[in-house]
Image (cartoon, helix red, strand yellow):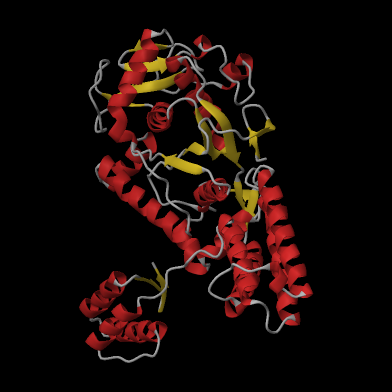
Length: 488
């Protein structure tokens, strides 16, 4: 039976969905004021694995991930760039989702945006005011923390601790430092919406309470996010939702561990924030996914060049085993045991043991490091088997390949990576009168033409080649005199 660690109870609990084999899952999304970084990737890779394993076990998962497209950070960054805040956040939302796709993280079923649900948030705030949990203060609306008796139950803090850490920022009109904003009155040059309390915009915490309940109902099964969101964001979500609706908000709270970079916490002050776009220039997506899967989702992970080199080598071992099985596999995996030799029967038993070991690890709160052990046991046994059996049963090899792919893909490995569009590249080659036996050859020759055009300051031709390559799925980047390319 699958057991998950519930942050609310601080223990592992049997996972029992609200509705049969259907799982409703919400993970806090990004505030889109800059490109997504590897800390974001760590969180969403972790929940991608969780979702994949739930589906592997036969659950039907409906996964919602919000986009915070209006926020203080967005407004500040947009003003500095001299761009409309909503246009600015829309641009970065698109870029962030593109980055996750390039990384091989499966998309959510739906990405609701905060600005598309202002009316829903206003209605929720009105309900909280009506029930006495919120108050109006000069155009702002605040949640009165002391009115919600169970406040602190997720973060395991009492009111004395909460009050000790609370502050009133300049311009805030709240009655007590621990209270938090549900609605913020409009400041000059800020996006604003009409409300019963005057023009303004919602606070950050209310959006997740409202949108998760709208799309998943209450209570729903899983609410996830990084450990840094436990307090105050998730604590506030619980208070708002349960105060407004008078019932439990979420059954299981799951939180992913923080990501460090070479042993240090990621921060702007240190200057060690690494964007997904930048890391993908140096490392392939599968190597990065393997790195994330090699850590238990609740534990901190340490991002370094050494760790990625190790991940790259491990991925290659997995790919080689896959290729060996593909070479020996037939078209179907339906075989009879009596058809198998003793050595083949022994390999079949090993396969069943590896699958059992994998499932036992994943059933224990998605223990991916232990699951990886099962995967590499599978690799080792496969290599030995294929060395000993020169002409193995093709159906057995197909069966082994299917099992190998199934458990690998739960761990986000051996996905179908997008290849080069050979036909489109051949047309482009004819247009520029170049020849090449492979797509890679054609790309290199086109880049040589572009390089010469740049040297001759013929930027029109250089830009034209860049754009045409982009249309056929090739993204290029000039780094000094060198040009790098990759499949988008």
